[in-house]
Length: 181
Image (tube, rainbow, N blue to C red; front, side, top):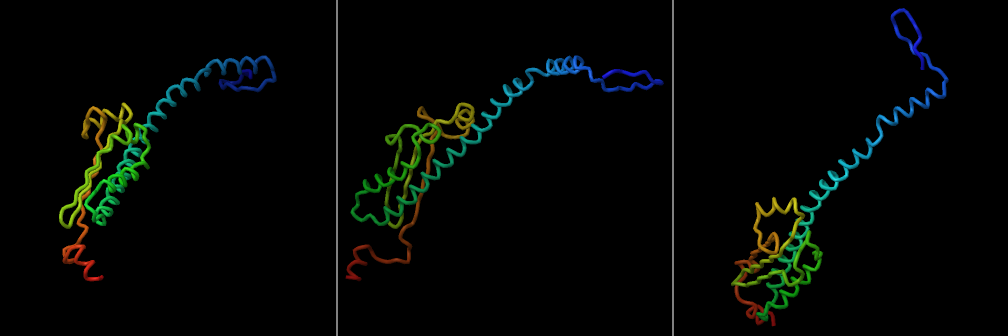
């Protein structure tokens, strides 16, 4: 492109000079070289951090949901367990908790870390499932500040208290067996 003289106005006219186009392309490439590399160097870690901050709460919610579901199923199992030994209900809860991956984002400590307390009193049952999670460092600081934590990590606790025998049902299980036998 060359500047053509005019009357106070600059007009550009296109030339077919190959050397000018090559020089112009090289100059243009030199002025923006490395721009994409810098953008990627800033954008990729930021993107990974955002993904990590979004994935961690999902993992904790999944673990808590599995714990709550296992506690609810244990309450129903305790309601029908009439031998008095709740160890089979405890093993049932542990089997249900195997759905939680043994990865620190979900649960840390393996099977031995789960604390399960089961009790039956009169018409109600109560189940408490306690586990630990080790969140990512950035989110771990915030979670440790606002939730219960110990040396094993952030404590996840799900408690359930259910009345499994309504008050309108009279008698015991043995009475009902004799009545229908």
